[in-house]
Length: 116
Image (tube, rainbow, N blue to C red):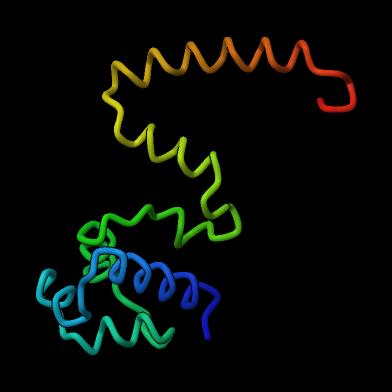
């Protein structure tokens, strides 16, 4: 099994099940064979970009879940923060960057040395 096969299969399955879709429904949505979705979820698929791209977009999957599984912290505050940021406009993001930088400066300045 390839290093990417398990994270890919797991993320695809979870996204599909969370949205209460069958493999056949997902396949129909992106015009592929249902066996392709089955193979990916069973760690046997090595999809081409022509399949992977619409699959990720259709299921609204964060690509980091696939390409950087080691960075994932299920149900973590950072995951929630990323989700919130994904919903922001460019103007909101610009404002939030300034706020976050200020808050981090204050937090990091006022922490005991052991926590830095």
